[in-house]
Image (cartoon, rainbow, N blue to C red; front, side, top):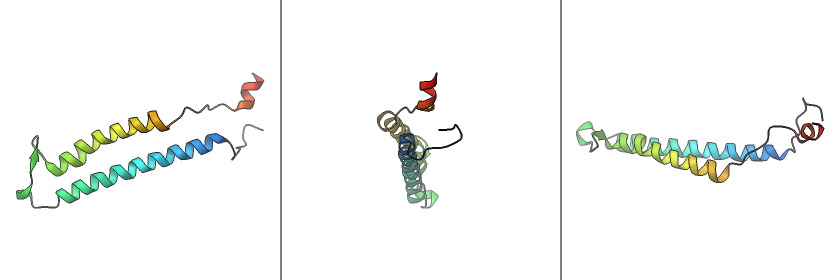
Length: 96
């Protein structure tokens, strides 16, 4: 196969698509988490806010806790579901 042709049956595409879907799922989870806490708790009048470590609770849960949860989820996803994929074609390796 010439270098400029792409084989759609290459198993690396299946792996890349699965990992991309995991990434999209993480982004959607992050947005829903952030939106839920930011607008759920943050839509009240300022006088009714509760505070955690000097931050409004909506901000603490949406940004601080959300960030920490996303860090853990990304680490779990990368270590548990992502696999190393060689970038070189098998044919090129056999020639050299």
